[in-house]
Image 1 (cartoon, rainbow, N blue to C red):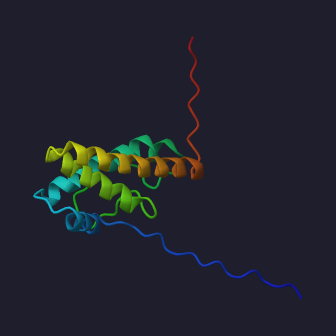
Image 2 (cartoon, helix red, strand yellow):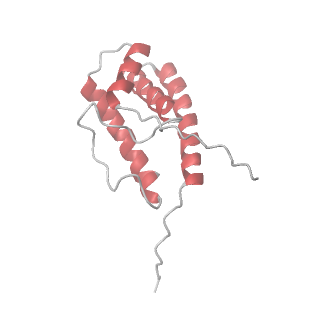
Image 3 (cartoon, rainbow, N blue to C red):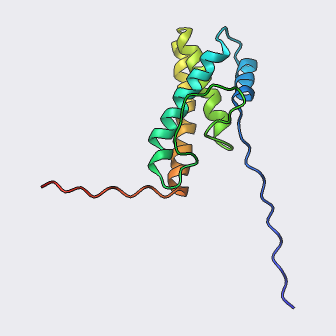
Length: 137
């Protein structure tokens, strides 16, 4: 009698909502910036991630990206990279606006490290779009 392989349990991927992330950053880094400003920063970052990484691969998670308008929207990058990526980025933007250059450099260094890890993972696990053939003559 053959033994069956144990069932693999899949956990739901933890999605990050804008409001939850901003609340976490505000707890870590009290600041005077509005929810709208932080949502704008997150929109700029996710717009860049969509255009430079996600859109360049087959079967993107969405067809287009537009700026966030609702605090309940989910961010593009999820577990395990998203939380650190967005937290470091928002803290860096806060430091930049406060003219705290040493802190900005430190936060951007940590952000860049996680961003590189995410980019490498995405490139390994998603097929890039085929380049269009072009003729020079």
